[in-house]
Length: 145
Image (cartoon, rainbow, N blue to C red; front, side):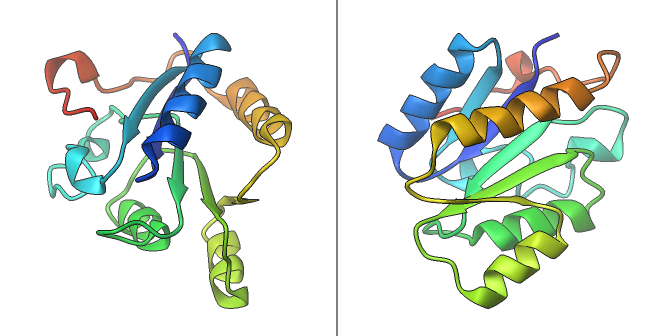
């Protein structure tokens, strides 16, 4: 099973580029320009309360129109999200946001980021993913940009 990545960024050009690069490297990628498009981000029925995680990796922009990436990640953690690998990216980081994101266990990237650095992090994550894990079947309820 391919490692699955969810990308949250309102910049569709960046999301599209990342999707293409990651898919070429054998990842399954879903992109969302707004958290409201993802069926689990705002739902009390987040699938992680069962045995199935929605993804292996979440990468989010820090500042999006409808929610901050920190709130998105913290909300998922509070709901028992099983996604183990999380990253936040931004052009502007306050010291407080940088520290808080680190406390949440997020990998942090400054835009523009070095794609090689992000790929090294993703490859490290992929090595740690249990190949027998259960993932939600996205083909049943896709709402993708």
